[in-house]
Length: 476
Image (cartoon, rainbow, N blue to C red):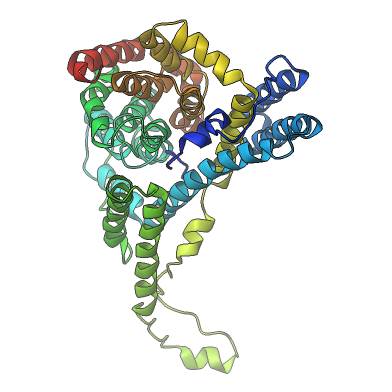
């Protein structure tokens, strides 16, 4: 199973969101220059290629990384020719610093998830659910609730693929259940990540930029629950009442599995403490947490049970054949978990962040900020951001908003976090969870199937925003 990112996690200092915040950098307004127009065209073309990745079979990181490079080459060429030799380099390094922290945070998080998958944690959960003999309707709510809960600590793609494996195993012979359950998982995974500071790229970016304190994100918990429950309640009546065939007992997890779960939670706590109490980047706390996993790996290797000898050892020696090892435990290697990261996704985020930083340095995000947050009510602007996230990756949208750095209240920052996080549920292509499940379900879940339930999802979107205004008025 591919594990991706999320989720999504680092401290992005204000300088990383746009070179306009760096007092030592002199700007040229290139918004009406040919370089500005070329940069917009390059970014748009690369993003379209990334969106149709499954069709053209070209990894999404390739066009985005190339676009980022070309945009900054054009910018730097103008600045160097104008006698401002170092200005573009200063701005680029500022954006690179922000990405480096994001990369390190995600690297540790995904290494833990890969390690837990290697130890059989996720397989055990999947088979355990299959062995209980739940009805389709119960499974619909159980997988939805688990998606909501898991996505608050894991990224929505990982959560969706895990729960997707469960419902596919139980519902592959019941297409109506499978299609609706996939929609439910996508909505639940996006909603669950919208109230946790480390549950989704949008919340991580807002938290690490300092716009909303850690604890205040949980004010979005009830609106997020409403966003999940409203469409799920409507879809419930279309779920078949039958019960799938149950299977046997769940397999025994490998040594160290439960310890890894505990250490992963401890690592998240360490990252939070680093940011809240020590004013250090959460990425530093995550790297400290990686050492927990490395020491556990060292312990597992040193205490690994010896393989018993074969009773036919003398026969193998007689024919000079290497003696096979019986019941040998799979050796755990931390660096294999790191090597198995979803590198395409990580490089895609590099391309996105560096490209957006380049467009900001040119001056386009200042124009967009004036359009949205000066010429428009911030509530309408933030809701529009949520609707746009159904068409454009929510991480890209949120990074752009943070780069604009609008002067809005904390309640509005919570609103845009909520709307961008759950707005991706409106369309199947609006989130990594939806795109991932479309590939996993082999036609049972598609853009058209999701679109049929868009009115119910939109109702949940509206209800969650209304709940935010009703319950969190103190933040406005």
